[in-house]
Image 1 (cartoon, rainbow, N blue to C red):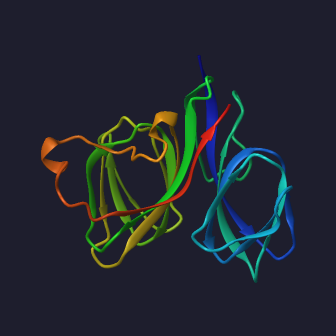
Image 2 (cartoon, rainbow, N blue to C red):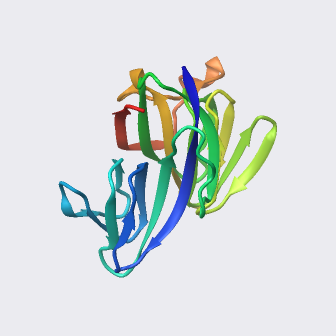
Amino acid sequence: MASTRRLSLFHDRIAATARAFPPARRVLYVAEGGLELDLPDRPGSVLDQGEAHHDTRPFSAAAHEGSALVLRWELGAPGQPPLEGEVLGADIEVGDDGDHLVRCDRVDFPPGGVAYLHTHQGPGIRCLLQGSLRVEVDGGVATHDPLDAWFEAGPDPVYAAASADEPTAFARVMVLPRTLLGQPSIRYVREEDRDKPKPQRYTMLVDEPMAL
């Protein structure tokens, strides 16, 4: 049986003063600076820029030095409405059998890199970190700049082209079948693209089974 859950992205500017977060299923990605987390079992843990953490427990966070920009994804309870401060959100269908995983990774393109027409095996929200990315999906075209966010449902074919002038990167969180633990979720649509060299580089940050 499936239920509708809200997948949301927030941009948090964290200062040196600790900020408390209530329990929720969330992923944190440090886009700028460093983040000090006070977790129940790991007080004083530090996440550096480019690192991510997945948790469901309450915690407090403060910038390690100066301030930090954190991308925060949350997967809400069934029927939860949009939350205040949401940069982007989408209602997704998630099975209640616990047979899922949450994945956070970073995708880097060299100048002029492309992602050939492809699908994924689950929904997710992306956020551009640097460069620019032209995304074509379902007949629409959008060009994203740093901190722009967009949703991909998974089965809709997507083609993406990075800036020709500078490196491009984005971070994303997806909800995927648990059978994909440690495995790529991408599927290329056209047979001729499957064996072509792929310019993008993937950095896996979180890949964890989750029970709902």
